[in-house]
Length: 156
View (cartoon, one colour):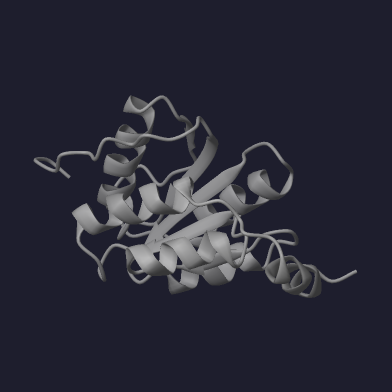
């Protein structure tokens, strides 16, 4: 989005897969530029415009690449982020949650060890989306009692 100033991402370098549908395209481009400027390794899985498209075509490849271990994290964007999270969570090994503020982003990583973040571009401002990404990437998994729960989620 023109005019949006990227936040000063100050974090360890990560490999990040990113994808969106048409509704999330503008946010994806800004987030990708911010992450790349901060030295993150980012691969864009599309879409490449605001032309209406089917989000599973772009979200599933992000989730599959993270599940295969090609990327440490994934970020998916759409209008609400809900459909994107559903698609990502259909891939074994993915834990994706929709985050709408900095606190949910922190809990998503700290308590759920999420490896894919979903954001709804129609539900949060671009500035908040950038803050969510930063908090999410900077927050480590707490382990402890949460590890037991993650094992139950992932199953045998």
